[in-house]
Amino acid sequence: METLTLTEQYYICAANSSGKLSSINSYGPAGAVAAGIMDLALAGIIKISRSYAETETEEPMLPQYLSMLYRDIQNSRRGNLRKVMESYVMALTNKKYGEYLDMLLKELEKKGAIRREKVSGLFGEKTRITVNETVKSGLLERLSSSFDGECTAEEIGEDMMLLALFLKKTGVLRSCVDAGTYRKIASKLREGRKLPKNKEAFELIDHVEEIWLLLLTAAT
Image (tube, rainbow, N blue to C red; front, side):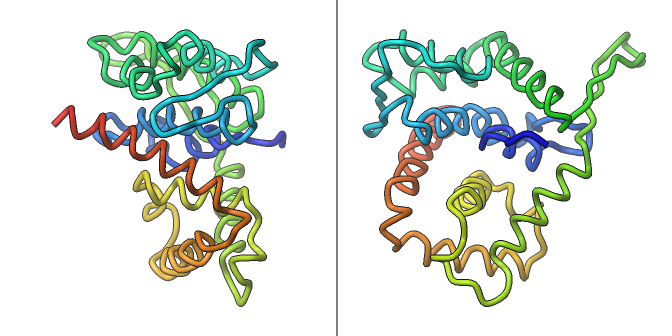
């Protein structure tokens, strides 16, 4: 299995039984775009300052969905991340988000994490998405085991620490692990926030969270 980005891991964990991000859960689409912003920031391709981002002058090699997001940030006024997220998840049509999602799904298909197939339904043909349960269970097992036992927050890898924090903030974590594991993860995340090595990444997630919470508040 190829390495999965935070966005791809988020999709695998957040997808419902139909393999989709539920439109009922407002964090679904917003979470997928926010994770993309996090991937760009963690790779050092953009630098976030509150609701704005600076981009590199030349576009780096990226998966298609991240490349699309990167260009939109680059083309937005002063790298306004709130405006970029609005254009994906608060627009009158879901055309832009649909394009982003299709590119993300293609990347997940290429990595063997999902399967898409056309099926006949009552109202014509539709696309069925099936998440590879082996990939999902392996990811969640790795996440749970990282926070299990007597290990300290210092010993937990940054990738698992960030995935756990992102899933917790988007409300996905509770549905992925049992209550005991959830409490352990929440406790270790509180410890992890105090560690100097996690300071920058945790602050990045906090900044991105502020943006999507502003969007959700404006929508209500």
